[in-house]
Length: 448
Image (tube, rainbow, N blue to C red; front, side, top):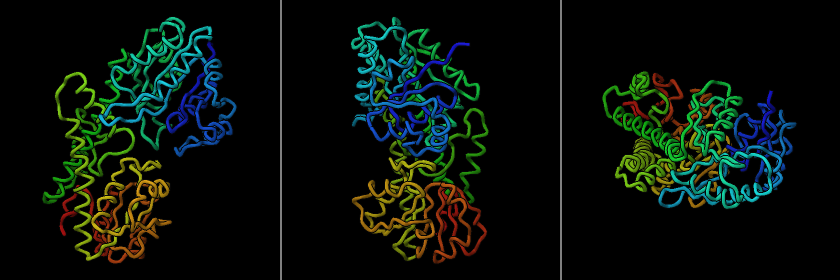
């Protein structure tokens, strides 16, 4: 039986560190590479430098398969395959800045000059159509070799959700490979075949098609989310409207599917907003005129910056109060990220109107302090109960498991005649006269 390749992973952020731990879990020898000493030392010691469920346990249990270094040369010479998963931040025009990828690739290329044998370079960082062609040219210039002769290149973006990266990495819906040549694609397909716990289809194609597929998939997800939120707004204004009933039925049609088709808060986080803008940028780059992605962004911004804020202001005015409690600050549960979070946008909008807000999140209070540093009159609570205490209106913005466990009595004993505005249908309080329970996408929300 052929021995498994030794793998190096460049970039030990949320995805890179999780990839490294999963490869080690499946028996590969893995070398992590990062520019931050504290991150490298943590990985060496089997301790996760990131917050992501399951990663710490995998690192701890597979220390014998893991090493980490700040020396790229050491990692490349000691491995057969290098995965590059470094940031590609967005530019103002929606395109991606590939400077970190270029730096890693140039380093890899310079080492490949002196390396005998075949080496596979895998770009996992999200890039735009045309970027991989530039990356291959950079590798050829810095290595002095031609792709297909001494090294191969693949584009292999992941389709994961923060908070469940381990599961999604080991159980992908499909695997996407853009390949420089057949040998490179075959090696990478073999790695995935031995990595996954399920049996996904592996789509192998040229670079341009793979690059477009990645951003198109995320852009299409934003369309589904935005469509569901438009339905939610209609349902709120329609007698007996219930967006959950509507989207559940729609999702059972195989032409549509139920993933991401749920009325709630607008999309956010590090992937969907930027990939949607990147999709619009790519269409423009190739001379295709359309406004679909741009319009989706506009509707999404309206949902979080105007519509939900207006509903909350109506509730505060009805209760004759200026104090609001908000449970959940991250863009989704099981994540520390508040980047483009709907809750953060709503807080910023309401604070400008003079609303005094108490906030609580199980893991992201410090991240929120940084994000909201210019806003006064925010109380950063130590617990959900501390956040609710003394307020009349509560907005449940993130469906953390901790919030799902809150009972009627928890709200009744900490709040004064509570109004609970639930974005995620977490509770069954509809028939309790002591609680004014309102939900996004239900007609009762606007019966004030």
